Figure 1 (cartoon, rainbow, N blue to C red):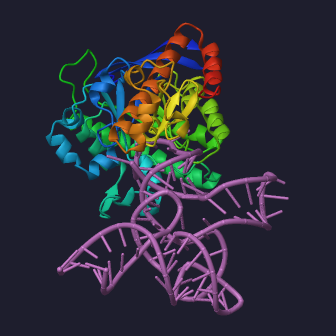
Figure 2 (figure 1 turned 180 degrees about the vertical axis):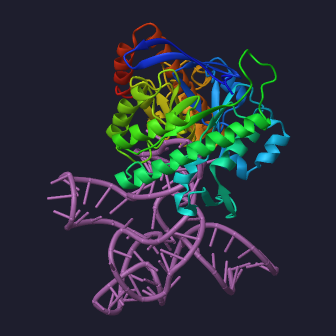
Length: 393
RNA sequence: GCAGGGGUGGUCGAGUGGUUAAUGGCACCGGGCUGUAAACCCGGCGGGUUCACACCCUACGCAGGUUCGAAUCCUGCCCCCUGCA
């Protein structure tokens, strides 16, 4: 049990911003890092070859307990050798616990101390997710980083609501940890790396801090989560309906209080601006569906702001999506062509936009890391935000 | 030539005497999307003036007519489709 599942080292700091190295059993990841979301074991519209190629070079992606549990089922994935082998992804994998679905599917669930009773969004069947079940599923998936099962209340939750929720999350954190440890001892983890890299092969587990926008609750939640003890800590329950200043406020006050010797993960965030702003406040890891979802829906992120490929003004524009981007899509295709694909309903449009957006997010993080290491993050941050507000021409 | 059916806003297609620029779909124009129930959702969509409430104009093949009132009824004309010769 004393063996470390995860290595963590801060290599440079500037203000609260930190550049670090996260060592997982499937490779070392430079932070701050953005993790593309691959809910169903697939980053929608983007092949693993692309994620591994130089212009993206994603080191870690997400999978989702709830979705994979429903289909194809935890035992199917286990029988296929864990999610890595099942999907053909060799790099690091973090799985969300299903906690977010407690929020996003809130109208078709029943919450209790034991866990959550869901109406499956696929066929309406009743199913029961709990800290224990979530840990069992995540063991079967064999992800490298497991998330504790939490309850995510709406961002605008009142103090009392948020307090009750936080306490439930704290009790679930304990149960998650306990069941996780049992499963590790029992060898239930389906994702042991084929060859160790000096680290133990066990899965790592992160705890999640809740408390909505109430700072006293955030502090309390943090204390109680740290008390349980995890390999890393996440801030959950943000970008779920609260005002943006409130989100930045929580991150600004909470991140610095999180254990400095562990990675800090801000769940579900965010826009490119959010990433840079939250790195400045001390966050190391991010994930968000924005680059892929918005890409599928026709929006490209560029160094000069967002570009809606549906707009008629691009009809004959021969420039790439972002003139400052060197991704495979921008090297080859024009706005006019991508717009044409989108307008005619070609699935390639979604694929190209998703690819470009991920390239932009991942490259932004690459530049963030470099800036922190060279002590130029403050300037980078200012110039980056200026660029994002300059408007696409 | 005869018989039947039909011509509606970018398009397909409802509507068959009485609010209303005229239901819907598509196309088009614009907006949204933050641990993915999302290749989705929302809005606009005849023209003109106005910041706006609003106002004016032009519209259901063309031309007349009936009527307080017509895309809807009548007459003529022009096209299109199907069948028979």
